[in-house]
View 1 (cartoon, protein in one colour):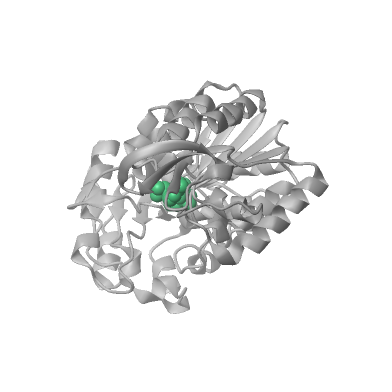
View 2: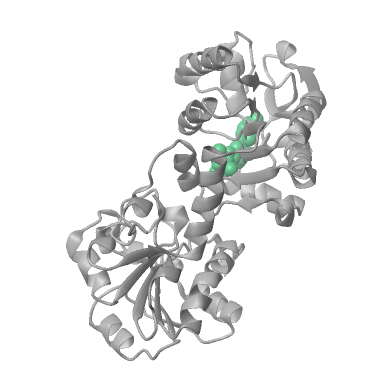
Length: 392
Ligand code: ADP
Ligand code: MG
């Protein structure tokens, strides 16, 4: 069911608590990728323009219920201030008297950022008292943190019990694009999956088997499927306990007449860090080598499918793209995604980073800001942070 958004409520003069996803990568206290902050801007600007008092909250990293100095949100407040071209005040606490005082002092159009939510164990525990404390700061709750919507935490689920709860524009955009490819894809609908963690991706493949016309597999996870076909894959990453399930999925693909393509050739190396490479057909993978990228023939085949697709969903790099010599498959695929006229949707943190690195992000229809959240959505799950928002 469609959820209410900030457009459906009157926010003028109101105190609006906005859960954003400012969980950005940091190196030595510097933000290395501010995409998530930039993506939150439309909602924040909209609220400012309508005279709301904007109270932002987010988690950052995994402080596990303790104050971790390096995970304070000060660099985020500074970057947001630059992006909005206005001061963004920040509290050093998440809840409590100093925060209440800071909120009480706010004027319309002002922006305040609370400290890292996960400095309190109550956040991840979805503690009702903590959720009530957060809710007491505001008149309205907005969830714009798609990337955290698969978690039932105090700031994503608990707080919605006490306030009118609506979606922000980023949340709306994510649900629209990801929902459209599941509900009404233009065919042929092609899903490309790679990367690691077969266990996380199997439910996605299962759900997509009922919808997609073709599923292409690359990356580390493809070796578990090649094993299931009875091939020897040398030192390539295999999740042995997943081989049985992989075989069952390929059987189901046959039954449903969904094209299921595995690599036909791969780039192999003796170390995941680099060194000499060879290209071999998958049937001839040498015992002491490991697959680190899809090979040129596989690349051609995958690109050919991409060119003829109406809709493409891509999660997971085709190889160890962090190493330049193993990045050709991922790069070629990102370029093919940019060139096709199909609707293209990318999910997953590493895949999004790869697409950015290749420099084609602007030419992808939608790059999800949610890693785990986008995968759980593609599994067909209702995300708890979405479920609690008010229906239209
Ligand atoms: P995403 O974050 O997009 O969901 P994953 O986290 O599942 O993607 O997978 C990304 C990781 O998979 C990358 O770090 C990449 O190096 C690794 N990877 C891809 N192919 C291989 C491979 N053949 N062997 C080992 N690791 C691989
Ligand atoms: Mg990842």
